[in-house]
Amino acid sequence: VEQLDTYGMTPLHRMASNNLPVGARALLEAGADPNYQGEARSTPMQVAKESRAREVMAVLQEYVNKPRPVLSKLRVAGSGSAGVNQEYVEKDAQVVPLGFSLTCTEMNWESEKMWLQLSNQKTPWYEAQNGAYIYWNKGDGQWWIDAPDGKGVYVAKASADSMPTSGWKALPGAPEPLPQVQLLKSANASEL
Image 1 (spheres, rainbow, N blue to C red):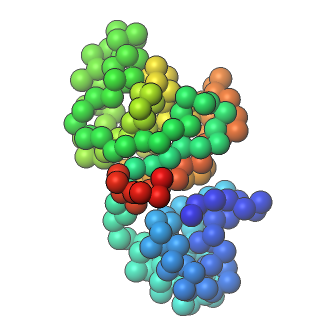
Image 2: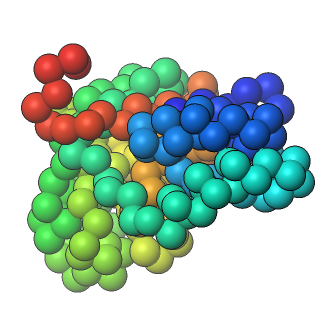
């Protein structure tokens, strides 16, 4: 739902620019972020205002301050780092990821203390079977996709309650292409 077109706009931006409220509502119900700028450098609301798309503005207003739940399962695909192209399951925010602990040990940091420093202790993190994980870092306001060894691979700036599906950036040395994240409705979704 956050796939960018050649102009850096999401489908929700397109609904806003063309005043298509039914499509906008469907995208928002499917998990589109009403505050995500994509590469257009404008929120869907800004695009709707510029386009005088009053019906879409009304729909967006319903969702713009509504908390968006972080979903219990997701899939990373298409990245140049095969180790992170996995399905991930939600984990308790209080539990320290194994890969995170490995990196902390390597750096001579106390993992529990560092997790308290970087995690808000509320936002769940996500783990793949191979140990790769995704978490929100309150220190820099970014979601991190880390390889099984705990090394960071990709980051995306977004709030703790808004897992980005695109807009990821490669950390130095990380291979392209950049990942796409597919948000799944629940941990027991049968359509996987």
